[in-house]
Image (cartoon, helix red, strand yellow):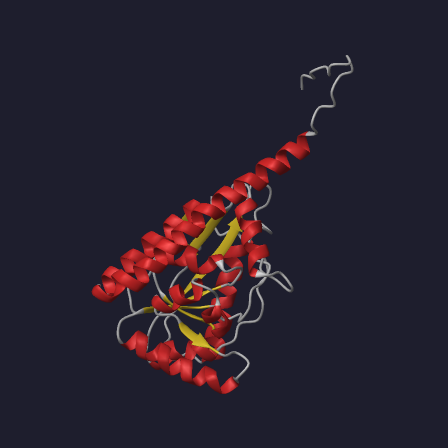
Length: 273
């Protein structure tokens, strides 16, 4: 790196490359977050003003467009593999981050089951509720039964519903145990279950740490990590659907978990029959 002498004739100390990289990373994150904020406000406007005049199909098209655009604004690529089952279908995915809803919606808009805490998030809570999200209080075991009935009703009406049976976010490469309660809705309505393997990669790792939303990490900290990431890509792999006829829910949960873990172990490659 060239050095410019100071007026006294002594060479100036060149900026360290890592310091320059850090400044670039910070400004990149600020730029992305500024655009993401504008896009989120636009999404809120769509929910409040446009959605009341649209049917369900038109709403879902808007949701897919908005999700794809938000990923792009945040500098996140999208790699989708596999074929998704036509609705009605229950999508069952591993859970890594708040990004998961965006990644799945960008490929197939769905009604999600989410923790009731999300409903309290400023603006975003309003938007996910606007998209038909079903909220569950996971601390109350009896609330699961209420949500199972809601999911079953949505599937009966021909919807695509998505659930995260881990119940919380994980590190990505290794799955947490799957809770089987919500899968009963698919069994009760004879609806296929389709596993979705979610993986986030970046310039340095097949399983990026940038989207992590673990332990004491706040939402703002996680958002900053994502906006600062270099070449982050969301891999969404649709695996083979599972027939729910004559299968017990715990066995169904084990089968789906095994399929997703196998896909993650293979780097989210295609799964053969």
